[in-house]
Image 1 (cartoon, helix red, strand yellow):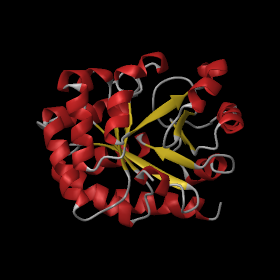
Image 2 (image 1 turned 180 degrees about the vertical axis):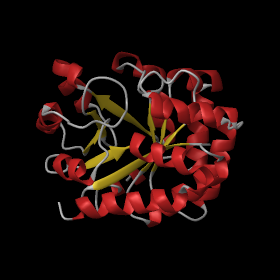
Image 3 (image 1 turned 90 degrees about the vertical axis):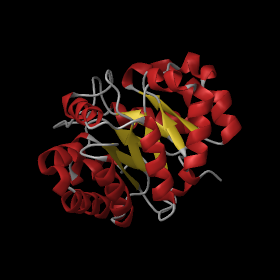
Length: 258
């Protein structure tokens, strides 16, 4: 069993996202360890990239700060290796096609395996082109996480049928960011997925409050929160750890009863 499956065995999953290297690689390491202790079921680590097309301004800012601070893919791999000495929480990388191909797809995915990364999310990798990456993921036992969005429509069944680990359901149109309201498209997507594959579905893009998390986990298996956490990191910088930990604990507690 891949470690990602464990994220969904303890009730509804809370999945926080942070950008690796923001505000520093050392703080990122502390955040991962302490978010795991606070109840995070899976942690999504963003690999900073100069052109993160799926991200809103909050996470774009985190990418710029991390890159300005000198973070590299190799430093992130080394950090995950250190984390793995103390922590078994599932970890998924969120990255883009360009960094993976610049690094070398097989080398990148082999290093994921060696570091202890469990999954890979690549928002700009079309389903039709996943053959560029999937053979290496299969070889090294890394889950390539599929994403679906309201625009996926009749492709949802096709994507869901072959999905591994869990399905990342993009709640609404546009880039990442906090939203006041999340529509019914997410529920419809989850229901459609479940007709072809009994795979966990986690809702991301826009979830920020305990109330939203509770609403989403009435029909989904988990929620993913990025921008709301990255805002805390941006506000408090190197002092952010206790504030992020409190947020994670609050969000996890909110969905525990679901």
